[in-house]
Image 1 (spheres, rainbow, N blue to C red):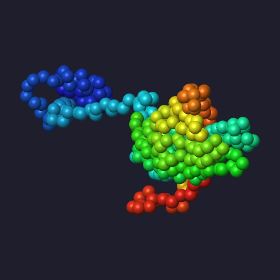
Image 2 (cartoon, helix red, strand yellow):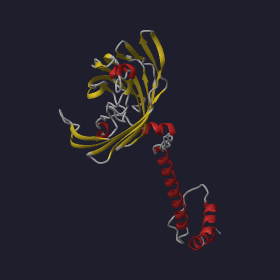
Image 3 (cartoon, one colour):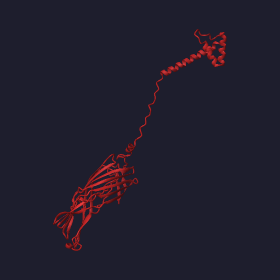
Image 4 (cartoon, helix red, strand yellow):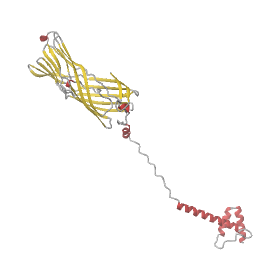
Length: 366
């Protein structure tokens, strides 16, 4: 009966894999190994099945051994992305300091931006004493013999750390006319010395400038119909403060706005006409709003521009001293002014890395 089952198993081994599997399960019992070389060859099938199971066990053992000896798998740490910059941080990155500004823009020369301008004129006439055409006409010098503040003078739109010293000679800056039968006209020059400092802050986007002028003006005068006449404005000018802020900036240009204040710290102006004296007390504060721009039109050409208002906030008391004593006779109110300064420049030579002379430029200002 066993042989017939073996024959059935052999037939199943060559025909149907499912029948082979069930037959092997029935014969898989403990005991001596079968004779693989029996006459009818049925033990070959059993040997093949057992050999296949041994191979499968060995392969499973090798796989488990590899899993035990294999190094543990490491996973890469999750990639973290930096948070997007806020609006405030982006603005800080856009801001430029002197080290990041283009060298052509940082080396732009300051504007001259200066003419002396005209003083207020005063005429004193006494037809009964001096006759027709008699009298005295003279210019009233400003505090310290100077004039009102111009922001564009020796300045540029870019905030800069610097010390300031400027000397100006104004030829025939004022005049003094003593009328009469033979009028006498005296023109007088003024030498002005300006000391100051400009300091930047807040990432060099702001600056504060302080100026104080002095003059070598010693007065002017002559002999008129009313006797000796003279005018003097002293030697100390007004202290001015100028605040500047950069609104927009690129590699080729800068636009700034600011506000200045001219404080009445200078000398009074005094005119002497015969035995009479007029004193113009220096009392007015001036507010100086302005805007400025600088532009590199090309590698060698540049443009500077300033627009400024000069607003007198109050007047100056005028005091008359004569035979009756000293008394106030009114207020001297200065005009509100608008200054426009436009300058064009061309570099004939420009080398910021040069050891001595770094550049030579020609300037034309309107």
